[in-house]
Amino acid sequence: MHLLLILCLICFIFGSVSPLKDPICDDEVYGIGSCNALIERISYRIRGNSCGSRTFAGCETVGTFFKSIKECEDKCKK
Image 1 (cartoon, rainbow, N blue to C red):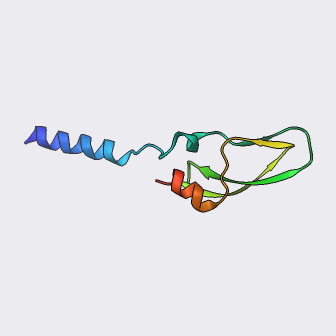
Image 2 (image 1 turned 60 degrees about the vertical axis):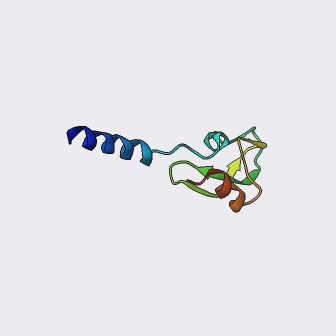
Image 3 (image 1 turned 120 degrees about the horizontal axis):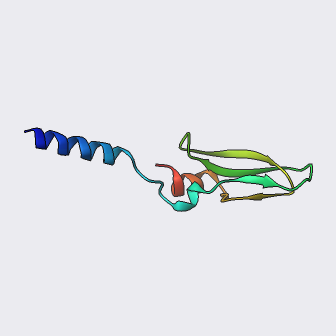
């Protein structure tokens, strides 16, 4: 009986921790350069498991960005 309980607990723990759908969702995103430009891009936020528009300061951006929130959610949202 105890073995069954332990197995159920292990399955619950590992089942509730799911990896990201796509490894690109884990990319760090940021702005680079000393320009005074503000660049708006759509990216995934791991902490909130959400996609949204973010504004970066710099000449260009680095990381994985998406054309739409739907594309981001399809690739990354759990």
